[in-house]
Amino acid sequence: MKINLKCETNFSELKNIEKEVFKINSKSVLFIVDMNNGFVKEGALSSERVKNIIPNVVKTVECFEILKAPIIAFTDWHKKDSVEFEFYPKHCLQGSIEAELIDELKVFGDKIKLIKKSTTNAFLEIETEKVINELITEGYENLVIIGCVTDICVKQFAITLRNYLNKINSNIKVIVPINSIETFDTPWHNGDSMNLYALYDMLLNGIK
Image (cartoon, rainbow, N blue to C red; front, side, top):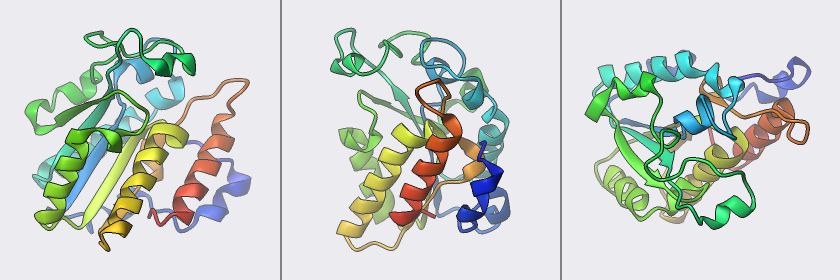
């Protein structure tokens, strides 16, 4: 992920998963947000910046696979008349190539549990909350979030998850590795700035 070096020192508390990998144990869970074709390789919302984090994402997944820890992936899955298309270009229609996970993740097969989402916030899916409650009951300690995009889907899920854990008075950690998340860049959406704002917002909200 790209961060303006002038500002990077503001985020010394944000951990890179490679420095934490030995602390990630079998009681850790990996959530992958929107690493599908529509955000990574093709379509109106695809981004070269996001494409560049594929190696880090795959490496992270491999770490969790070795530990036989749960891996859950979210993918956008929209109806043709989705109201979200009033705010964003059409993307990730149900049954389309865009809505499928990238090939680099498909190779992990059923080791990745897929949850389809119809909004930018994956926590709002009934299946997501059910899975999270099961993980809490089973005693998982670290919830790690990777993927895209930093300032929308990643941030919304991370902060909602943290707030939910706060509500039930749980000290389970929510961790967002900065080398495995990214956002897009356009004239109206400066990728470096949006990464910075989103990371700071997550830091203030208790995300590690």
